[in-house]
Image 1: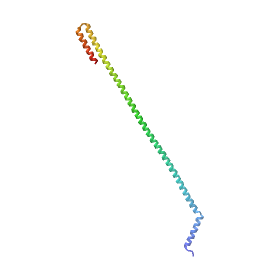
Image 2 (image 1 turned 90 degrees about the horizontal axis):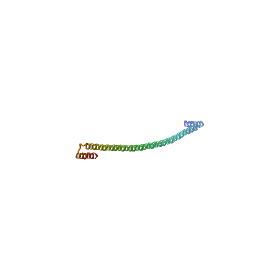
Image 3 (image 1 turned 120 degrees about the vertical axis):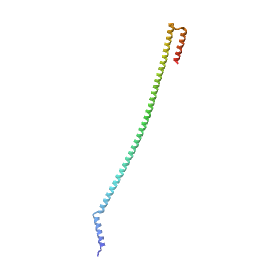
Image 4 (image 1 turned 180 degrees about the vertical axis):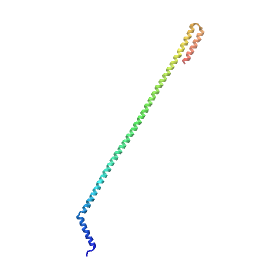
Length: 160
């Protein structure tokens, strides 16, 4: 009478009726919706994290550029300071050399003045000695004239 195919069909209908009665499709739909919501939430979270990471990356890049600019400014300031110190040292060295040159010239001028004074003193001593000989009567007029001429030649020689 009824073959196995019929009973398999009836079993399938009963199974489907039980599945519908137990609201299995609603549970499957609910589970799939929950899974979809979870995936959507994870995607939103990933999008939010990506945007946050991009913001942080932009912030760090800006900070890096600022740090590089600050470092460049510091290097430039150090270069300017070094140039200033070099120029100042050069000026101080030139001033020192000028002072030392002036001091040396003053010492030379003083030495020249001392030498001239010595020559004059020697000339005066010679003139006094010649006058003393003349006055003491030991020297004749001719001898006095020759002594005077010799003394005058010595003075001229020392003055040059």
